[in-house]
Image 1 (cartoon, rainbow, N blue to C red):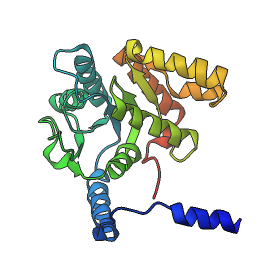
Image 2: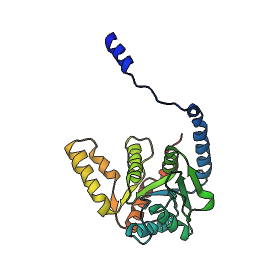
Image 3: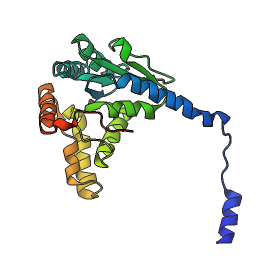
Image 4: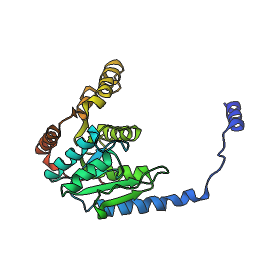
Length: 238
């Protein structure tokens, strides 16, 4: 054993460089949490809409996101998005133009993004850290509507599903919107993860219903809160 430890010590990798500022990063993180909580604690119960930044106005899912967000405001919910273009802009537009609460959790990226024009001016948050942004997305959402998107959308979706599966947050509705887009993934989860490898439980499939119909989504959310009226509160306490 001692010889193995000596061999490991000789071959052990070392950092090329460690920035001295890393120990001070916590203060930036704390400041971002404080800013986020002070803003988000004052919003009404809201629903997070995830989706691609690349979707263009006039495309099917852009228009569907706009319609979906407008319908949510008619039911008294605010709308939370990532604050950028594409599906995010479409959802903020639907909420904003329908007189509802429109919230944008923007992220600083090297190639994008400035926030879109359809966010309430006092409800724009600019994040440096993805993990802080995720807390704001999840803590204050009473449901999640997941439109077609890329890796970021998948990351957000599976983060939420994991937190619910492990009971780290209160179960809330998660709806995949766009059966043409999500059908293949859901089928793979069913056939490969559940049936072939048993890496999830059968009841986990209930966490990801699909729909193309805004009215159906609204009814799903309304029925959920008819059955779980006590859940209309932030998803967890830190």
